[in-house]
Length: 288
Image 1: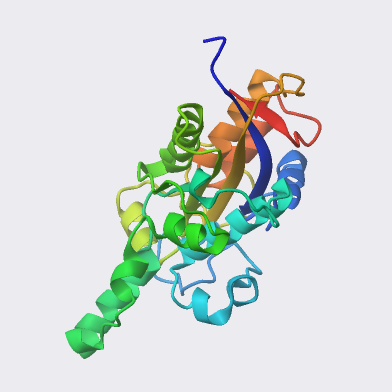
Image 2: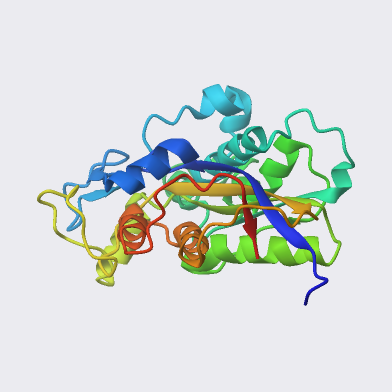
C-alpha cells in the first residue's frame, strides 16, 4: 500500500441552496445558514410538503449558452456548470495535455426528472409526434457526465454513477481508483441532482420521506428529516506524487465525502457543525 499513487483534490465547484460557488457554500455551512425555503419551481399549494432547497439565481444560459442549456435537463446544467467551476479553480482552463487522460464521473440519484415530467405531459396532451428529438438523450441519468466531457474537452473515461444519495460519493471513489490504476490522470467527479419537481416531491412525500413542517422551513432540522434539494458538487482530481501536502483532519475528509453524497443542505450543516468542524477553508488537500 505504500507505493500506491497519491490523489489530490486541486479544484472544486458547487451549486447548492446555500451558495453558487464552493466558497460561498462553505462559508454558509460554517455559519449555519439554511438554504431551505418555500418551493418556487412549481405551485405546491396541494402538497403536504411546500418547501425545499432550491438552487437560486442560477443563470444556465449565461454559463452554458442558451442553445446548449436548452438541450440539457436542470440536473445536467448544474453538473456541467459545477465542473466548469472546478476546472477554473484547479487552473486547468488552458491545460494542453492529452485529453484522453481526462475523464468525467458525475453521479445522480434520480437524474432528469423535470425532462421526464415534461415529456409525459406532452405525450398525454399532444401525442407522440410532439415529443422532441432531444427528449431521449436529455432524460438519461449519465448526461451530466457526457455533457461535462464535451464542455471540458475530456476524452477519457465518461461514467455516470446512479446509486441514490451515494451517487456523488461513488463517483469520487471510483475516479480515485481509476487514477490509481492508470486509467486517467485527471477526473472531474461529483454529484448532481434536481429533484424539486412535482412528481418527485409528490412521490417522496407519499412514502413519508419528506418533512411537512411548512412553518419556518429555513429553521435547521435533524438530518433524519429529509428535504428535496437541487444541488451539484464537482471536484477536479489530479494524480500527484508529492508527499509535502497539507491534509485536513480525518473529520474534514469524511465531512466532504459525506457532503457530496447527501443531497440536502441541512444534512451538511448538521454534519459540519459537529465537534470536528473545520475552521478554515480546506483548499487544496490530499485525498486518500
